[in-house]
Image (cartoon, rainbow, N blue to C red; front, side, top):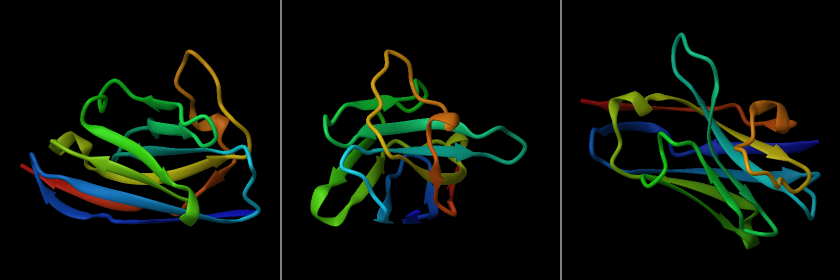
Length: 127
């Protein structure tokens, strides 16, 4: 069982920046894909970004491309989501997700591609 712990949520003004962290522990794998999803009130969970740990390949939703950056710290088994130029519509609960294998595709992953989830961290962008 893999454990994922998110941190970094809070309140930020529109146009500001915030960084989320997700630390993976437990039964991690040498081939790993970590991702971020978000869910706003009344909406379905949607893909935000993902990182193929070994290859360093990244995936981004169109709504965040150019504003968000996913990165990793190998020594800490941690993935980060740097969010810049934040908008009120970015307000959501953000979930870290893990897949114990590499992800290679021309399409962005979906929630079904991930088997482990964190508890989520809330952040709000005020206008």
